[in-house]
Image 1 (cartoon, helix red, strand yellow):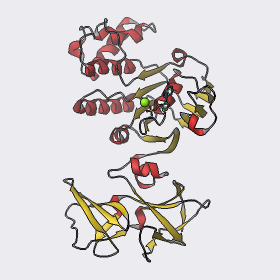
Image 2 (image 1 turned 90 degrees about the vertical axis):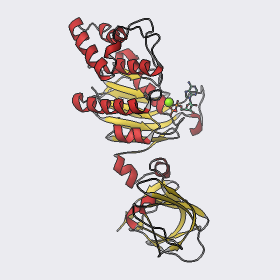
Image 3 (image 1 turned 90 degrees about the horizontal axis):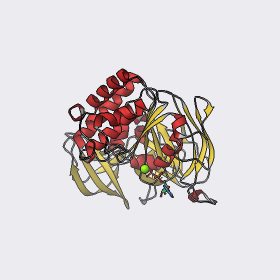
Image 4 (image 1 turned 120 degrees about the vertical axis):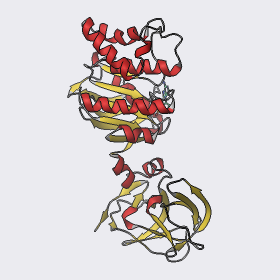
Length: 360
Ligand code: ADP
Ligand code: MG
């Protein structure tokens, strides 16, 4: 396994890229530590597959360098990089048996047949296809084929990293959960460097120790699930992670108080500190629905809708002209004339979409 340095990588699919928008990856600079379990999370089209293919060598980046354990591999082929990659859709040999599909990558590398047999059986058990070993891959269902694909990625133990590109898309929900837990166990047991691409926050947060959030060809935050939740460094991370996502409200600020632009008249919101603005940009306050307290004090809201999610309720309401979401914990009640306050511990401030630190 290896440490992977992605050094100032930019990539455009156009022959003569000029502006930022011409780049599928605007600039990515990041180290994937040896043995880390990473999720690469972001919406469709943000550049996840592009980055993964650059790491595996299927794509040569327009700019920048890729290092494995400090060694420049930018110009090496996929094979020379010794990476296992599992794609969104099955890549298997239809005419081979399930067993041989898994044995192939090992035999190809000259692994002794006894070791091949041991590894293949172990992997077959993991993907729950032991009973299908002698069957030809042709004729199997889409999710069985995808499990073979996954197995082909996991069968080798000598790789520098295992890359997964939304590998569970075609797998049914229960099996998804099983396979994800197995990948996690495998990581704990063998310490593989794993990069797992997904657009599904639950998948990312359960699989990874570190989640790399991408948006519009850039990494916008790298953090633990708790960091992404408590301190989203970009408003996009706030929206994208959490259910419902973070409320983002335009504000004006003086010292350590904020005023919502959507409400007329004074309604000072106390901030946890004095913001350290960097420039003269658009200022927004971010607060997750979990940190909005609903009661009989604070700023009046108009109820639009209440969603009952079993363990808690989500209140959708108008605060001034802006719709907000607030979580009402189990047993909580919504008064006849509800008002809201913001828990200072849950307030983040943004300038031109990027989080700003606050001083004491
Ligand atoms: P993701 O995997 O996050 O959905 P991709 O890396 O596939 O995103 O795509 C990033 C951007 O690059 C998108 O705008 C996409 O349309 C574009 N793109 C991807 N592959 C190609 C290609 N082969 N040729 C041209 N544009 C591409
Ligand atoms: Mg993709």
